[in-house]
Image (cartoon, rainbow, N blue to C red; front, side, top):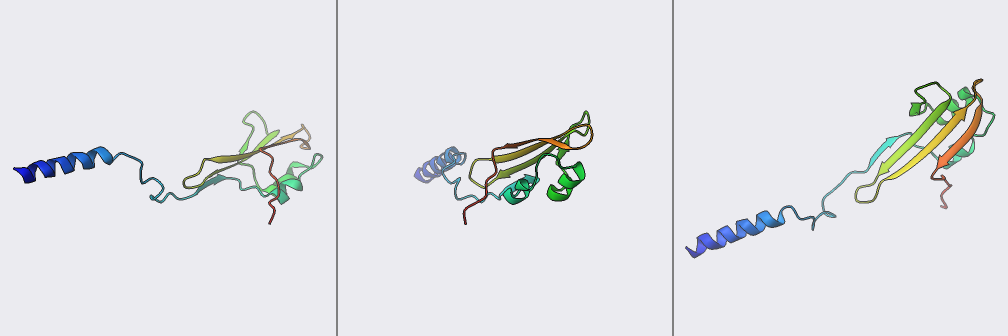
Amino acid sequence: MRCKTLTAAAVVLLMMTAGCSTLERVVYRPDINQGNYLVANDVSKIHTGMTQQQVAYTLGTPMMRDPFGSNTWYYVFREQPGHEPVKQQTLTLTFDSNGTLTNIDNKPKLTTSKD
């Protein structure tokens, strides 16, 4: 009888702690990177007055273009390291009707790393 009681108590205890996140840091989570990987050196090469072809040559094709025209390009990079918070880099480029770059919006500001 005592063996059955101990077994039942062990099973109940195991079931109660199975959902706890005490071992979350032990469980492997891969890094997930999505979108356009932007390097600060490449972004620094972009300046107003460039054409769409020059920008595409420097940064590659954008992740998304303005669905109501081709005057706004979005370069989005989302990084989700294993057990760290998500980081997102968004570069928005606006062109005029002639295809000339008029505005650069870089959030958060991409800076060169100190190595």
